[in-house]
Length: 547
Image (cartoon, rainbow, N blue to C red; front, side, top):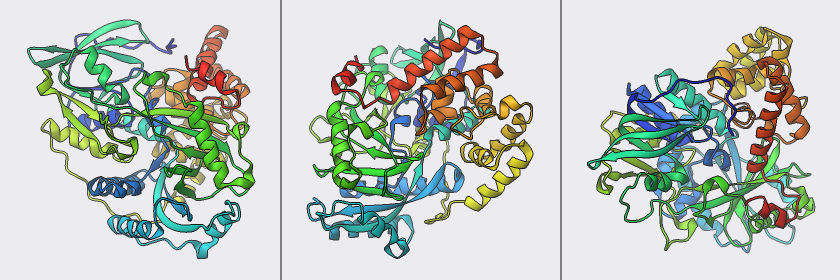
């Protein structure tokens, strides 16, 4: 059930040059690109923007060191270029991150081969190798690693976007400001095809409970792991599936004594690469690769995957004594990789593919296969060129390691603290999550003490940020806000009591009555639990919850 805050106008009978189906980072980037080019654009998402694969990623913006192993030099170049662009343009959300690549005598990759790959990676990025503070980070890490191995430490630089949900929110509002019509909680029932060409899209507004139809000159299917379902519902004549879904699962741990301050990239027991990295005052561990062609909306991490990740990090850091009760939660998403039944998941390309459906009896429809956080804007430009628009590649200036714009963020935070009568911690949090919009939110907070109140007692983020999400960022439900626009519910200390306190503080400003308060809170708790799966329970209970 979707709880509406305000009614919204029907789209029935309207004409759009482009309808984009799917509001993950790829779909939002595509819609923004078309709107900026002056095309009448509609973006529809069946749940909420960034609520699918985008929110279930490892949250790194990287050139793809691993892709060198598979010879995908073009993808690495594209990713590195887009990484630099994001570091330059979204410095409040995308930060340089130091990575330590760990190898030992059992590793399947030789140190010599990896050093050669790192040299090429850094050359392609136009950056020099980072000096590891005279080895301080390596020495600190070595003290907590398994002492039964001889460890080699190799350094390189990439970047992290702790909250890609916030990046999506910014791109979304930019697309809407350029003229795009955006609708979350609106399902694309089918693409209307006649005489070998698309004519429009049949929609269901899950908020208003109405079916609608819009005309379209083009349809871009950016629905990720749902792409084949969109084609099936539209009765397209497909020779084979577009996708072969691969599930990736993660676990989140509390920080432990000796937990790494840098991102660690190493091999699990079976030789697969995994990341162990600081994230949101926690430690994020992932990911797995398991074939999964089930319903993407119901995917959950299996007990085997969770145990695999726990075992991998426990073997790496034996002194931390990590076990299942240590895990705060686990989550999973389906990578929409190209259909490759004869390949191992790790060998399937990570580059995106634009499938033209003209030969499938649906001219002017394109399905996006694959894609990742780093290259979403590049994918959008390629989609624009596919339909005849001029979308030039941007000039990129290398930002280089360690050049996050922290001094500027500090200055902005101090100014906003003065403007908005909020603490410096709250002001900095606003700048880090909202960038240039932070000053306006701070002015909103001046209106009342209720708006300056923290969303819950454990966070410095305030209710004014929530009101901004409802008013300007197309949030509809409490989950849209607390999991994505102002994602405090992803925090290390969030609990059911935090949810209740947040609902009370937000509801007091929005004027919710007791019934609305209860309904919003119940729906939010159900969504959060379905996303961030508890792990402390027995495996049987975890699997039962997936039914």
